[in-house]
Length: 176
Ligand code: FEO
Picture 1: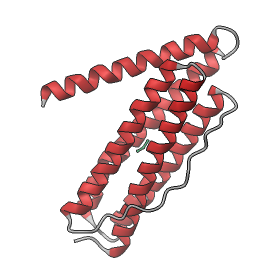
Picture 2 (picture 1 turned 180 degrees about the vertical axis):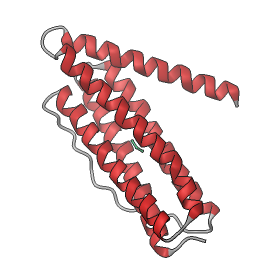
Picture 3 (picture 1 turned 60 degrees about the vertical axis):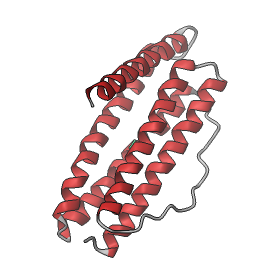
Picture 4 (picture 1 turned 180 degrees about the horizontal axis):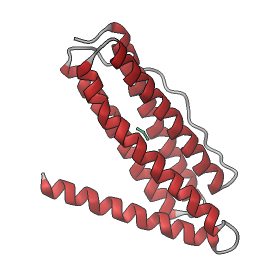
């Protein structure tokens, strides 16, 4: 049994995860438009992951007998001045999501709501991985640079990351 405050905050998080999915899908489309196929594939995969994050929250609300509410969604930005700006925006966005997860954990801890506190541990670990992932891409962009052939090598690096994610997903499906 969840408090109304917790239901409201979990619903807010559902909509934030869905917005994240829309944001990455839009960014994937921008990359495809700019012939950056590796980045487009990687971000499209990430949009799917965000929907999975959303569904975990949705299922948790269902399991606790609460109503999930899908709200209206703001359109994500669709113009980026460069690939660097795009990944900087992603890194800032993920840091803002981490702050939202931290707020949720704080609420669960203070109510106290130990079931939700335990449920949220997966998101705490996931946000650590996502910040690490996108900080790593930004570091590569800054190291290689986007001048001349640099952008080609960055797209290839990100393409390799997308291929590895695809293999991990296949292995997980086979293990189930
Ligand atoms: Fe659902 Fe990218 O955090």
